[in-house]
Each structure stands twice: as structure tokens, then as C-alpha cells.
Length: 202
Image 1 (cartoon, rainbow, N blue to C red):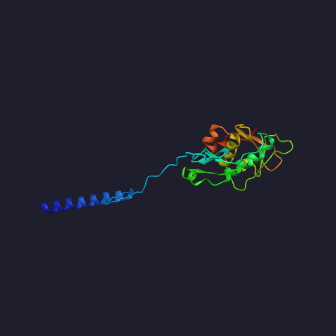
Image 2: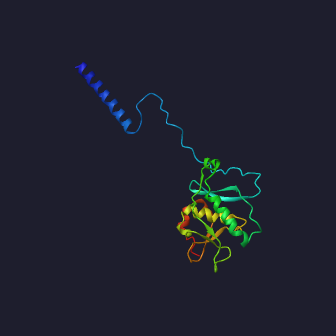
Image 3: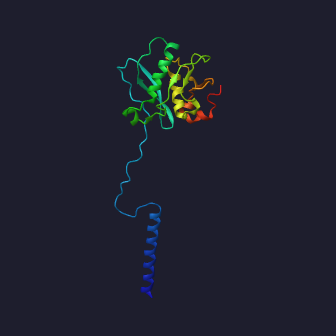
């Protein structure tokens, strides 16, 4: 009887060990005593803009995407000829658009920066009847990805050559009137809010 009792106890212990091993396997835990290298922990992007080229004669601030928000980066650009006004607005806008369309530099990419502005996008000046500060895009502003529209609005709104208006008066290729888009802190923090904030309704 004692031997049978001991045999039953041993069998129960073996069954319990098997059940625990199966449970551990079901939870994704490896049943091994060998150390397992799970790899490095996921790294977070810094969103720290690289230092601008100190030798650049002219720099411009552009807004790039980093994570789920916008962050500023300074780029070396050519100097628009003349004083801020109608004569330099379009060349300045085209220069800024070209910067937004460029792929990030290697240093910017390592910091987590990217751009959503389409390479095929074009910008023109105001038409007859438009306000002098209006800019016309080759697509309707509201048809752009929200991040791309926010990049344009904030970059144009920050530009000294464009008057530092804090936003942009943008229209599309058709005859519709341009609308005002503001670069608010909420838009910078979450460009997707632009689609829900009534942009371009006034």
C-alpha cells in the first residue's frame, strides 16, 4: 500500500509539472534554463533637430513630421531677392515647398523626421480677385494628407519672407476662393486635428 501511495504521489507530481510547463508555453514563456536574448528594447526617436549649418548665408525654418506631431528644422536656402512683399512671396513659397519635398537628411532621419508633402505638388501666386497674400496649390488644400497640409501651413506661416502671418491663405487649381488655415498649437501637436477643426471654413 505504501509503494502504491508513493507511486500515485509521484505520478501526481509529474502531471502537475507537465501542466505547469504547458501553461508556461501557452503564455509565451520558454521552458528553458538557457538565457534567451530578447533583443534590444525599442528605441524612441529624439525629434531633436540637427544643428543648422553656421556658414549658411540664409536659413529657413520648415516643419517636418516627427512621431505624431510637427517639429521645426532649419535648412540652408537661397536668399530671395528684394524685401518681403508680392515680388518675393512666390519665389519664397516655392523655395519652402521644395525644402518640404526633399527627403530628410541622414541626420534628420535618425532623429525621426519625415515629410508627407507630395513631390508633385506645385504652388502659384494669387489670381485676379484673390487677396495679395493668397497662394494657389496644384491640388485642393483639403485633398492633401492632413500632415502635408499642416506642414505647408506652418512653414508658410513661420516664414519672414511671407510675412510671418501664423498661417496661410491657400486655394486650389479651380476658381474657388482661397481659405485661411492657421498654424495653431493644436495643429502642430496633432495635425490630424486639422480635418476636424473647421480649417478653411472662413
